[in-house]
Length: 254
Image (tube, rainbow, N blue to C red; front, side, top):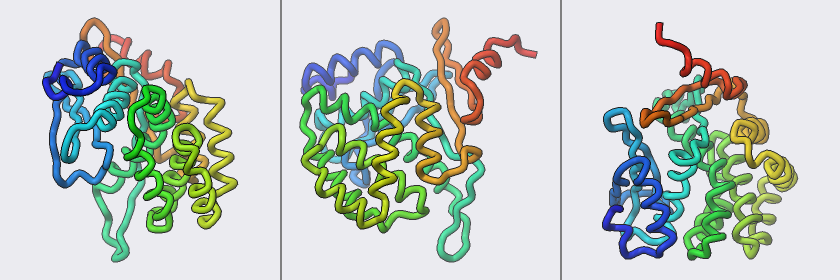
């Protein structure tokens, strides 16, 4: 296990060790310019295997570590698929295409869906949620700054879900912000809808796309599996059943 986890609570150490038993060492990167208060998780492919990379600002806190490790567990141990944007062109106020924005926003969409699971599990472990309360408050207070509009809706609905499951003390603040943005009833409908599909990531992606008014054709699913020590992945439209990509991987090479 990486030495940096040694001074953190046992829950963090156990989860890190479990992940590293499958992926090898977790890479830790300190960044003074990190915009995310809870850190960031990415995957670095080395010799055909994914290795988790946790980026953090300042000090690696228990809250930051467990948050990113829970993301890593779902992706690399539970093999939960993730989604990405495709075929969506975005432009700035001068009409110039923003080439990297589609990748960034695609990651945000998947991240917010994953928070339906990560935030409640983080709360269940009893680790501090000071940063989470601050992040949610900041999101709710600045919803009107977010463009394109599907991102404003995504942030609003994700914040409401997190408030409902983890920070009920923020319900009055969230209700006021959502009413101000005209999203109160839509946020409630989104929260009700996701309760019935918590074990189906593809269904959650569909529900989220519909709630934020994003066509399904602009989203793809990435499926990952590990068989006999070899990692394999496939990309498929959200409308494609998971069994399809498994058949493709199982087919003999031509």
